[in-house]
Length: 79
Image 1 (cartoon, rainbow, N blue to C red):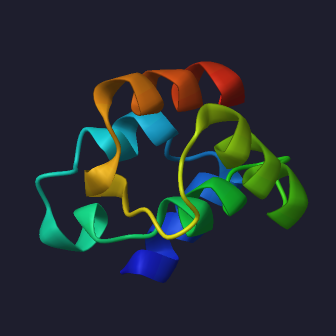
Image 2: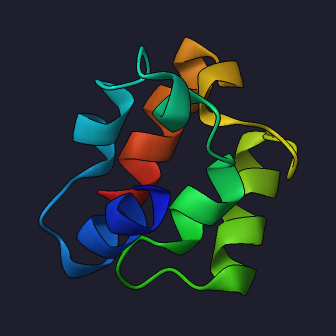
């Protein structure tokens, strides 16, 4: 299921905002933020790490652990 989500993000059939709406799902909430960001179209490993560092998100952070401001900054950075 996690790999399905990453594929859907990569191909653009799911947005990061839609994924954030599903944070109540235990599996989604426990996904690492870095892996999710790397799965976005046009974002690779280096860009994902740089983006997280700029926003102030630790590489080990899981999606559920992101604060409201971190989520908002992440959404604006990738949109």
